[in-house]
Image (tube, rainbow, N blue to C red):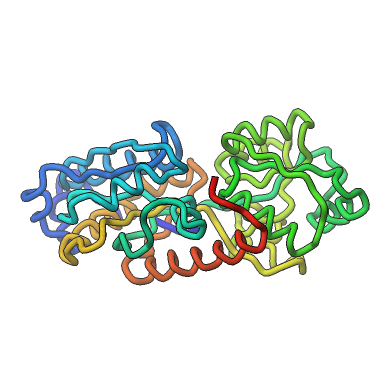
Length: 321
């Protein structure tokens, strides 16, 4: 999904002001709390802590990451929706945030939040073992059609963006396949390597080492355009199967009615942190691509992807679990 000039430590405060972020928030707010509805050590948690460290280095407020996992990410999301809209609390969101909206899972809607910024995105490749007979997704689809019910796909959990990608392919091609949800992309890839499943729709950071090492092969991605990190791997539209664009994204939203001035201050701090060489290097190392889409444009993105997920989950019969 997409994201995030050199700031010398000695002049960090000056640089922050140059980015349009006055020190008012740092003075009036002792801390900026980021609620992360994921477990410690997860991708969203790591991104939140990296951003927090960079904001503090630039002279911003102390950033506290509060992990509130559970309920399909609804527990932390609900806590953020009910937080005081004073600019001191924000929520780290990813695809589960909008999938929950699409499935009407949780006591909240997009109206309960103010969009701030999309921080980063990462591709979603469909992978098979490198020694598998299928060199293209079309060949895999042909195999599934010739042998109904014999091919098993897997992803990290049901009713996720990765599961939805599998359903998009299934609906477009009318293939009869098996689907197995695992408790994360890691276990799903382990099952693939063990020959228990034939294909996994995964997040790029989980499979980047296997792709580079030649043990896995990517057949297609749902990115909007081809990626330099996946040379030779087509996007879905190029396969002639279906036009479908989706990536895993990581963004920040605030409780509804958070003052515009506070939203701007937080946005400026985030974009300032994302634009440092240090953060760009860390994102690249983690298989993430900086985005930096903020404000109304990020809000439009959330609305559009929620609408897409509503259509797909309805057509595929995916229910909230």
